[in-house]
Length: 419
Image (cartoon, rainbow, N blue to C red; front, top):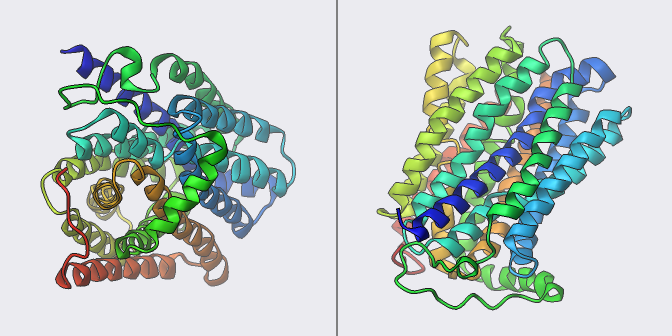
């Protein structure tokens, strides 16, 4: 294995684990929902509101984090985000009021996780890979699923007696342990270690850095250029639906939804882990397919199938067989939308601005996720059932597929560039 390949894989691996830990932090509130309600007496809407705030901030930070990576650096931005998440979650063990939970898990952890998010993956792929970008992005996107696969069963087991403090301490400690590894193993540019981007014959000059004082302006100027392009709004709108139908709804409420049907939290977390296992396969395969086919057609299939599965779920008997089928079918599609979306952003807006533009697109994802995180909790409180929330989310998925079909049928308004 060549030195170049070793360095690219090493950076990919460290980024994968950073994103994995960030995913674990974001999935923890779904496990904490019932224990916090029992311990503090907070209702579902209050706890869901904190999840919604964290999700929104996670998305809003994205474009600014991407711009910050061009000035402050990818390595330091990644390490700072992990440090903030670790300190915030550990501080929450002293909370006694709902606003303490909002501050630590909603605001501070949301800000930290926003710096270690999909925009980080997009920035690393653009900086280290000239070829196989879709596959590399698929691997990094799959880290979200792997985070759930690793963390959720452990966290659910820790809360099986109603305890919540062990979850807080474990998540915080893992974040802090990863900080020195990032600082040690992630070079800022391939040229810093005498390497070049994977797939390039010669090392290009390092991109001109954005001055720290200009990072904010660059994030907004990139947005100003993007909003004039119809593809931006298509990506923003469909990614809103992606967030609505994944971590906002299923990631936050599936354990509680299963609890309504007499399924224990550990078993429900195992269901999410099964989804995570199959998403690891599905999202990696999605990256491979993105390098070879029109990403828009892939998104039609992903959103359509996801929507149908969510519409069907409330009407199944919640037996072992039916839930296993749902977990496999839905899991293959969980985060499969990310590689095609990143590819469309890169091919439409160029490698320099694509991470920032994708950051803004990811705002749509998190707004959708926040809508579902809060809305589904409110629906459950008002109607005593999650069924309407899942059916509505499924309809949104089908509508997103229909909009993409209409866009393809009307003819492309941009030219697909080679991957």
